[in-house]
Image (cartoon, rainbow, N blue to C red):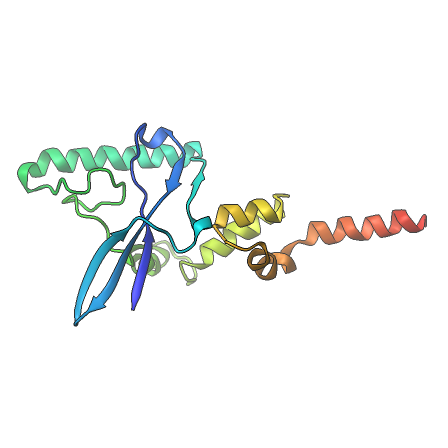
Length: 177
């Protein structure tokens, strides 16, 4: 079994710049031992992408990096310096495991009195919100990193109510009713 995590790194320029997805961190079982390694490739070529960093998320990442700096100072030599370019680190400077968010997500929901959903469902919510707000399907494909437009269209076309309304209105206009 392997788990993939997109590696979010603090590229030159810091968190004020867009986020670039350039490689993955992968965990797999090798002879009964969990091994984590990085790969300078992504699942598909279109998975390599650069996304804008909205101000609220930038602010949260900057606060997170501030906490990391405090941990570095508190831990001194014990703090792992190997992953300094990464954003997703624990208190000791170690990279988070690829399945960390998926595993921690149910607890976050429970602690906040929210109904259970899978972490992956957030991806579908994102696509649905983009579609509902008029973002074209091609841009959603690029945002999600799907290599093929048909993947995005097949999964999310049923949600595209606005295009159905536009199509219906075009039919009415064409028939001059």
